[in-house]
Length: 119
Image 1 (cartoon, rainbow, N blue to C red):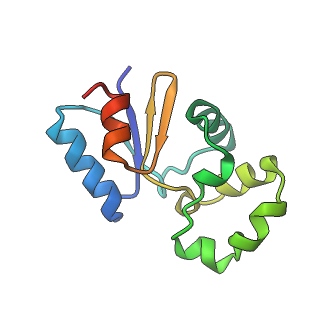
Image 2: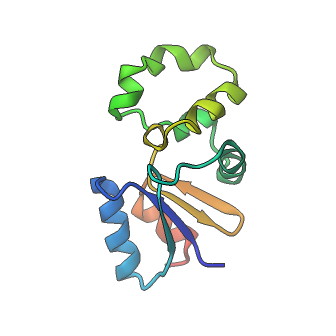
């Protein structure tokens, strides 16, 4: 299975991850997270495969996150509601997301990606 690289092309961290993948010779299917936002079902699958809590999937440095006051709202929000909210706008989702067979990585951390991809 070819990895799925879900990103926002204007994001500096995403561009860094694209460059790193190319340097490693890793071909991935790419998907613009804003133009083709993830569905609630995809997010549920990704969250389960990542082993991370739903809150880790929020782009906490994003303008939309701040405008919506999510820092204060998320602690009391049920998980299903958080997932539904994430599915409304790709800019709410932390990126990049790398979907591998049985594992999902959120955000770019070279050491974590290197370990997950056997590099």
